[in-house]
Image 1: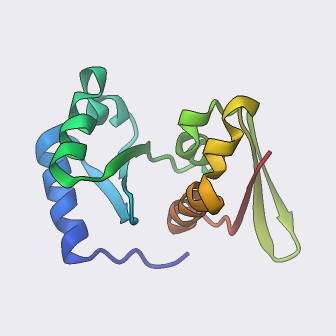
Image 2 (image 1 turned 90 degrees about the vertical axis):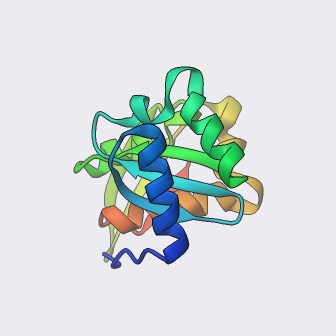
Length: 141
């Protein structure tokens, strides 16, 4: 698995996030339009806040969309958490040759959003999963 490297900016985002949410951040990934925070198991709801207040505050402060993902040691559960907003129906993980591949089945009504424009959301999901689990390939079905 790739080593997670955090930049000065990312570390500042983590400090801000932890101060606002009173949760512990395990990882933070910055993309052009959003910040993805991975929080410890059981902390996602607290991180988001009542009616999303923490996420809204963080979005207003940083100018970026905020995605909160709850960490899990179990790759299948972690992938479900990554795609949580898209109504995950199933995750199937299998070995294909020398790579580990996951097929995520989501609510058909939001499949396009799960993949994102030009596959952007799917790429972010693949990157964040690869940082924590030995899964090199993910498709959305």
